[in-house]
Image (cartoon, rainbow, N blue to C red; front, side, top):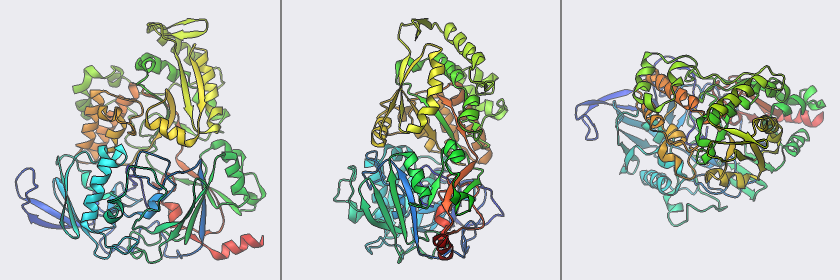
Length: 620
């Protein structure tokens, strides 16, 4: 349930639950007329609220869950910080378990938040402001009460000293003020962005008395103070972090927390080598793994423990927006400014051969920045979408209006001849030429660049692509770096090309500014890795932020998707609509899973330690 600032978990909506409505005239009402003031235990982005005020628990948790035991996880690389809020260092995995946010998202609704630190939320119909009324019994781990002053302090701290994404995410928030000890009001710069109350609801609250005399923007292994279900029990810097369940956690009996956070300890061991990590799992050195590699999934688990159903392999289907994983061009590099080159390189990637030969047929080709969702632009634009695209007609590729983007398809035999012929024709028409097996652009610049990687296992994937590019005269060198170097270089945009996954929610919103806006392109640490500076893209992002209902949001997002695809800012790779997990059979698991829990990040924290199953493992 503890999510990153750009995460939204979603699903379908059931019967409506109507919030309390009060008629009022508020000074923050931008239209100056009487509005309905809504006061509720929850807020939905669009549509209705599934769970009523007196609900007992989320449906994807279990009343059978018991507290106790230990969950052993693994991490990759290392960590050097316990501060996950800044654009420096490599923070420990799951450090968000220490913190509570104002609201928490349900994993079985499109985008609905329920009160966590906030007991109720209050806002006008036009959502031009929002007030959170805090629970009087909420307190930090040192026993000090959580107040509106802590909320205001946190907001100001994150936008001034936190990761740059906070500045973008909260760009439309004008003021934050403590009305009284337990009430905090946020006033917005606009009443056109319906997502703003939910965005600020995701705010993790930090203690003012802890941070006010410390250097927040420096990496540190100082044990932080939070209010969440866990504290840091122990650390072995770079090698292990263990979280201890806070048994007197103030929020343990809340409906939004029932069935969650059942393990007394959560221990994370770090491994620098993927093969060593898998062997450690099979040796019962840790309990649970989400398998990202199709090769490992197909070949690494043919062991007696799996055959005996002691070590369980499971695929959990989801319906979540899968975003896009891709080869990412850095447009700050002069050679990549030409869309003809970027498009030609798209033809050089042979997904069909890779999927058959390297991935055991496990993946689907990404054809959208919002794969596996209704936001994907899979047909020609309809009238409503054209109304959004036409104002930018002179700034968008003509194909946006005439073609549906489809990734190049090969015959899967490995030579990719037809697509390479198309790529060469594109390059020839754009003035490129080959001399001594090296491709040059019309200005005489050699097309040569570096592919930055952090995972050794990815070399087997990029090498065939590099070989294909070499047939066009394009020279690519692979640079493999450690996790810390990779994070620092990607944050500072010090790369030519990287592999990156842009995670998306079922309710795209402010995070799109961080991904694609011109202003984000120049700020280190932002999500605009490509360096896109395109006024048309900026305008299409604005349409998403101003969407008044779900239909408008879908149309606006498809328009943005279409524009991004036809500009060839990335070379799409692949996605999967299942979460692949491997775990030792010593856990109790809820009967119902959250269908939009893409990475099973919610699911694992609804599990519990089953002593009887654990004993059976020991006796076998």
